[in-house]
Image (cartoon, rainbow, N blue to C red):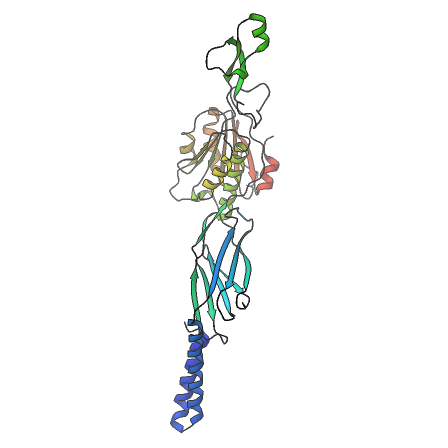
Length: 374
């Protein structure tokens, strides 16, 4: 491929010949031939075998919004000739990243790294990687694609929060420890042993006193249930940055619950996005699903999702519009605790006070952590 400089030299050579030849200037023909020969030599230079081994690594493949993600480029010269004028071009979410690769002697290798844009959430294809070879005078360029595109997942940012203490039947000792596998069980009484009972539940003191094998009878105690709802209506936010903050807030609330091994249901748009039952590692699933949530003009009001949620436990509604507070107030009697989080610049005079609803206005995640109920 001829570059702009190559086309310019070609045009200049033709112009010099066209002007000088009619007047019998042999120098014009010499200059024209020299210019065209230089362009041809540049094209032949780039057409010769590349002799390069190129490999790219993206690390990490999952990153929080705004955190650094790096692409590492490994280039090895496997040919017999020295390579110079190498430029790597990568594409990441519509942004072109250009990296100059140092000159490579024969049988030598170089490693270069460059940062990838992570300002927006979502699945971000990285690539294809193009390596440009140019001649020493920049008259011709050849682009060669290497490898397959990688997928970088940019997930929401989170801030540590305390899970909301809710539940119609509370354990006397408060929230159970997340390391307790049977944390939802509480002692209810004693009964005689039957085949199939776990021996770890045998009450040895009662067994010694009665002469009959006795076991502790356990009953389930409701764990703190949490429902988090994200308003995805396009009109509820003034811009993309405000919506990104809303997703960060929702992710922080949901992950605070899942990291303490309690159940949470996440609603976004018209329906349920993910349901976590309190198992290990479910916060990763929550973040992965929230990474691809987008605003929509046709999104339903939050009240549509709230009607699908089972009553009881805590409700957290996140929106950029004060008007969504009415949706939280409409269902406040169905939940033990209702929290409405409005993101963005604070409204004049603050959001209206609503009985039975805790209102938090957060301009960033730090303000959310400071105002979060403890």
